[in-house]
Image 1 (cartoon, rainbow, N blue to C red):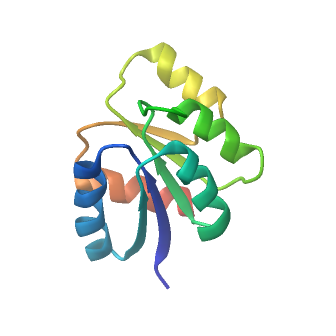
Image 2: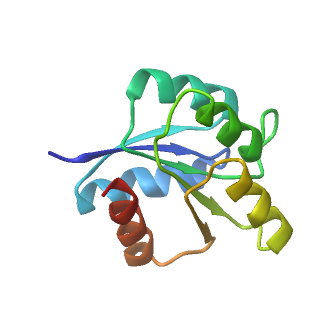
Length: 118
């Protein structure tokens, strides 16, 4: 049985790319391009892992993470271009389980997702 991933990133080029490559690694991928829809999709899809960007218009990734944590303990992997230690610490304080910076090698991303899914 494949792992269900929910990708929440406002950049369609990122979600499109992950939609193409992650299924070849055995994942079932659901992509959302807004934070608010991502929170709702977490309810309806019940993913095994959420891959979340931080810098998004509207509800940013920090707030999405906090909202998801209010109702779910799904593992959350931050995938962001933000490299400031203060921003990384804030994401972890909001409930993220892991943090990778873009760009990330595909094998590293796959390994981290599988580790979080247990």
